[in-house]
Amino acid sequence: MTVAPTEPATRPGQVRSRGPARLSGQGRLERRWGVLMALPAILGFVIFTIGPMIASFVFSLTDWTIGGSPSFVGLGNYRTLGGDELFWKSLSVTTYYTLGTVPLVLVIGFVVALLLNQKVRGLALWRTIYYLPTLVPAVASAVLWIWIFNPDFGLLNSLLREGGLPTSQWIYSERGAVPSLVIMSTWGFGNAMVIFLAGLQGVPRHLYEAVSIDGGGVWQRFRHVTLPMMTPTIFYNLVTGVIGTFQVFNQAYVMTQGGPNNATLFYIYYLWRTAFTESEMGYASALAWILFMVIMVITFFLFRNARRWVYYEMAGAR
Amino acid sequence: MSSVAGVSGARARRLRPGRLALYVVLVLGAAPTMLPFVWLIRSALMGDDQIFIAPPEWIPSPFEWANFTGALTAQPFLRYFLNTMLIELFAVTGTVLTCSVAAFSFARLRWRGRNVVFALLLSSVMLPYAVTLIPTFVMWRSLGALDTFLPLTVPAWFAGAGGGVFNVFLLRQFFLTIPFELDEAAYIDGASPWKVFAMIIMPLSKPALVVVTIFTFIGVWNDFLGPLLYLSDESKYTLALGLASFQSVYTAQWGYLMAASAAVIAPIIALFFVLQRYFIEGVTLTGIKS
Image 1 (tube, rainbow over the protein chains, first blue to last red):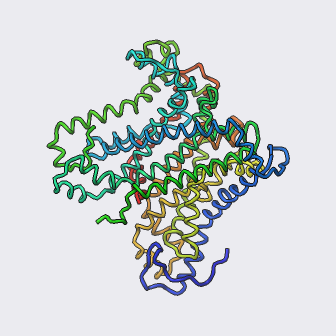
Image 2 (image 1 turned 45 degrees about the vertical axis):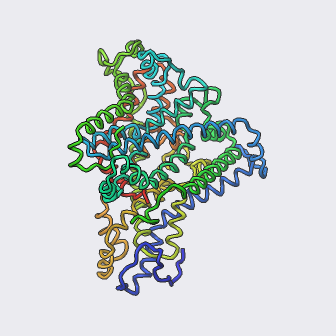
Image 3 (image 1 turned 90 degrees about the vertical axis):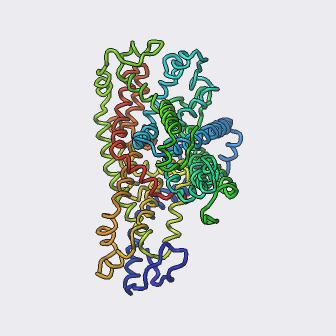
């Protein structure tokens, strides 16, 4: 890689400006080492992101089963998708799952973070207890929850039976399957919680004091300081949450195999099945690109909508 | 619900009933979080006859420790463990090394196009892994690397490739907080950027490096899709993959299954317990809120 010998002086947007005492050879040294040290990351980006992205798009325009030779079909795969019932099913199942999981995780994660932001005894222990489910490897948690959802001997139905409440078939019924997986995923709210905790620690104390001086109580402090100051964190968790839940795979693979009757045919699971059990690589690549676009569109709308409710410190913190 | 946000310590001690309510809520909230674990452990220690008693019993009698030896010898879990650790070794080393070198370049060395390149790299965090999944598989396949550990370790040496970009971001944020005068002084003494990186920045960045190490370690430990995609020979399985295949074979032997799950979960929880404060610190470090 060649580097041009001249570089414009520090622009205002740059990370930090240095003192005037710069040695003449220094700039060249920095350029050479800078590119060299970033090289693994740049190569990784080219080999494992950009290259595959382009390849994936090209694949999506072909009819290609692994082992065979690809034939160009243009937008044929995308046209087929439109009439593919399973594609629509997987899209709606995934959306349903996202709409169930993300709000629950956000609300519970936020409430618990508020609780753990207090001066409580044994804080480390509490944080660990609430974070623990997040650490459980996806497969182990799938195995565990199959057993919890077992209609005959599982934890949930045992508890419901003892409480004299109606039981459920959980993941084994078409209607119960996605809600069951929502419950299971909500169990892992720990990641959102930790990020909320970090956000809460960044809320300036003096703002609370200001509210107190004005005679505001607990609710006013929450409503007028905590909540607005936390909107960027809420937004971050919302975006990453949506992107994450749109890509669930493990539960469908280990627990339900997409069933019963495709009730848990999550998008990536359908893509996986198309690519690696039916080896329809071209069609699966088209599926991947549609998912990419769906996520882009959702993210775009979330960002556009964010302007209305996300509070940025720059706008007028003081 | 007592959402007493930001009550100062002195005030808190006076609000006795509020405090009590807080602890009650914390305990009640912990119950659904912990119950599946309790259920896991009690089932792991029960014989099959006791597991299926209704209403359920909570205390195993007798404690069926044989579930663990039975489960762990029914499949070569020791082998899976060693495979996992081997992948961990190469993946964690590669990620930490190449990510910190890149982060140093992006934070403290000036070169043309630096900010554009960094922004491009960061944008790949948004990309669904499904888009790169198939071509990456095809690439490894054409290189004859299927059923080897290469697809699970080599990308780590390119700054973690894909998901690893987050680590570059985190380390860069941390590096930016170190005073730039240190570099200046070293450069005046004739040090090279590599020397500044290795002798000044790295030693000062231990907390951030620990965080990246832990996150990467957990990521590899929990990875299921990667091994599922690339490993087919059972002798090469990782723990996650071994457990999944165990699950599909021993569906009826719940005691075994629970024991095996507990054995996969326990090390990662132990690790978290020891390094707990770094986790919280790590998330704070990333400065996500802006």
